[in-house]
Amino acid sequence: MAKRNLSRRQLARIRHTQHERERRSERRGAEIETALEQGRLGAERRGRVRAHYGITLDIEDADEGRVVRCHQRANLPPLVTGDWVTWCPGPDDTGVVVAQQDRHSLLSRPDLRGNLRPVAANIDQIMVVFAVSPATPMALVDRYLVAAALSDIEPVLLLNKADLLAADDVYHRYLAEYEALGYRALKLSALQPLEQSLGPQLQQRTTVFVGQSGVGKSSLVNRLLGETIAVQEVSTATGKGRHTTTRAQLYHLPAGGELIDSPGIREFGLWHIDPQEVVAGFPEFVPHLGQCRFRDCRHRDEPGCALRAAVDSGQVLARRLKSYHNILASLCELNPHQRYE
Ligand SMILES: Nc1nc2c(ncn2[C@@H]2O[C@H](COP(=O)(O)OP(=O)(O)OP(=O)(O)O)[C@@H](O)[C@H]2O)c(=O)[nH]1
Ligand SMILES: [Zn+2]
Image 1 (cartoon, rainbow, N blue to C red):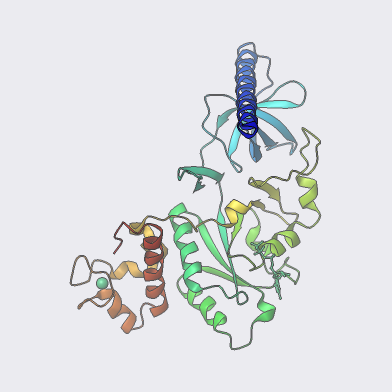
Image 2: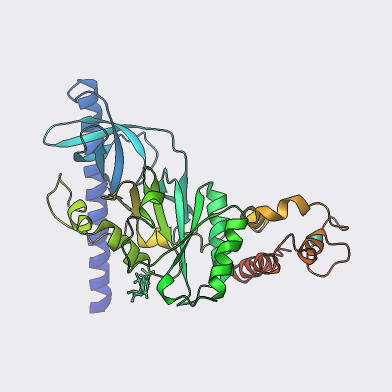
């Protein structure tokens, strides 16, 4: 009985907190509208979302570089880290985001209920990090390539832990194969200075790092950011210091370029993909598609399969066709009631 009472009380407290938060947010929204109507806000400026904390955002001014804690007008869609916005300075070092500028790319991921939610915007390239130890299955790299292609963001393959590679390691060949397919590919070690090996590839664009656990993403990010990671996470608006947030955060790399990072982003590409879209990560298949004898060819052992013929003649790598089938099969496991092939 006592337990039930307690949980009821807890429930009431949670409801009360939620209600208070909503009221505060509504009040804040009304204040913003009044300030706008009365012309109490400063002139419009351009800025970029550095981080997102519930109803407030850290906006970095495009000209001055200062970071301002902002609310957003109620009529705006959900903004995410990396968004370019128009904002107006308000009183007490705060500001108001009044418009969202067009996005050229958007990363989304499903929430716990399976609804797709935006996570980060205006990303120019996805660094697909992989390694010989723990050995990354190439089908996983291919899966990231599918996800990157579907987001319309250029992937770059980054083979880390080059120091562990034997001269005749098969990973050298894998990398060369991707280069031959037209992908940009790098081979380096996070234990070595990165200015020459990785620096130029990061300049003048916004990058995210993805890849399986243990391949060295943290090592790369920490080495790239050095001391700046702690400093940049201090919000100038609150002065509260480092946020222990799992939300996406935008960092300026000391050697140039921007990095958006969060645990959620690092897992990018590992959730559901529409089976019909998998082929987007296999550009070399395109000339052969639609050439099979059967229109519904699954490219397995059907006679007259153009894709298999392309494998036999060396135009398509056998491992890439296998990878394609593996990805389809993994989607099937996620959703066993649907036929994907
Ligand atoms: N030999 C070698 N070890 C490396 C290199 N990069 C990272 N490591 C080591 O690999 C291990 C895993 O590195 P992390 O940076 O934690 O890997 P991660 O991808 O961030 O892993 P998660 O946080 O689990 O996603 C650590 O012990 C690193 O010291 C490298 O270039 N060479
Ligand atoms: Zn076929």
